[in-house]
Length: 138
Image (cartoon, rainbow, N blue to C red; front, side):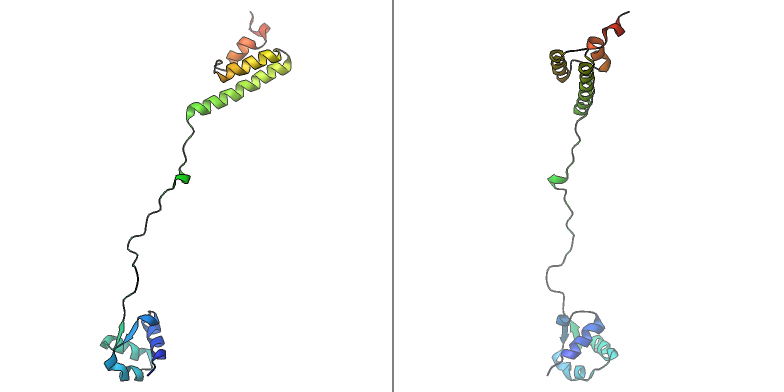
């Protein structure tokens, strides 16, 4: 005896999958007679229709997202940032001095080496030593 349509109706009424619907063998004639949604609900309450448990692994706790090594952002240390700012500033000043003819190319290379070695503390310091001599004389 095929009860496929009854199973489909029961799955719609009870809100579960067709695979989970289980008809009790002793009540098959009653199940065969059921044609309405109310009939199916009554049979479920009386125990003629049962629902199987869900198969498979149940998700109890969702795994937390871990931060991978590719997402770690480290700050560039302050000393390096200050060095880069100062170096760029001083190199620009040295280039201007060369362009204006206040220093020659050899002197320019020496200044660049000293900038890299952090010899000059600021633009003012560099200008005092190599800039317009007349400006600083009293």
